[in-house]
Image 1 (cartoon, rainbow, N blue to C red):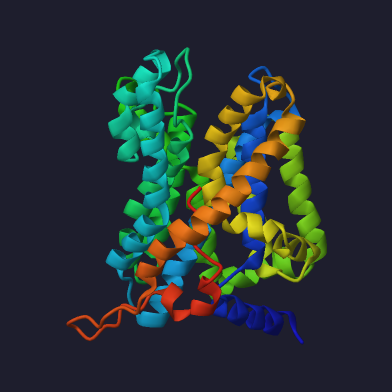
Image 2: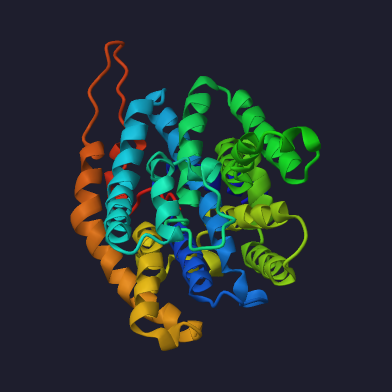
Length: 389
């Protein structure tokens, strides 16, 4: 079989896939990195202190998954049902988020009104409206409660502007230009190319910095793989010699993280390449490793683990103060508590609500069936829910 024919067959397989098991493994890797990072003492440094980059891997995954599913929906129905998309996102993300935010408010409301508690209530509106990454001052000399919500705010903002733009971009040109524009603008702000002018508008600066590059790169990856030419290029890079390509991608990521310097965009590009390798070559050693259990099981409930892990770590430190300086013990203990808690939450709280959005859609007045990609592929959907963090 020629290389072109092989790429064409793989592209057909890719377009027909409703579920990418290896991406659950990547979610697991991301949440393990974040949990480890938050388990470290404040003074930690070095290679093992860079688990925070797991959030950027989450961003790359979310950008790819949201865009690829919207594109699949448009292939299946000829349009995008934005109302149902936002309903699915709301039912997936909001219930657990607001339940935990309410618990934080109850806890901080009955404890001594220290600076951290006052800061939380002063900014409660921003937490509740997913605008904390724009308006909350995190550079303070006291704990910032619910600070981990900033990443969810970045993703919610992406979900707000990206799908409507994609809907209006039938050929994908506008969407491509918008993503490249958002990526370029964020880089200009990050490297202060706009000079002192932007410094006079700190809120605008934070808004522009919130255009997480990994989200844009993940969506760009989905746009590229949608087209035969883009997929062929991806196949040449990551599928034709899948084993060697996977080793290269993992090595680059390890070197960039270990170095701790260089352009942050380089790591976002490497994470996007990792996602590409996982979906293009699921049969490679990397794809099989990421698709294996228990990584898959952890990845499927990683949203709950992300929300629960910070309060669970705090509880562990309070009850077992000797673990505060022992992350090698604290992190596994927190994982052992968060994982079953997240699994129970997903099964009995989140999944029943999310099922409301999986009901077959009614036909619109124009005769267009607004059947979502998830509803069209119920078998895969039993395991898959787009990961927001």
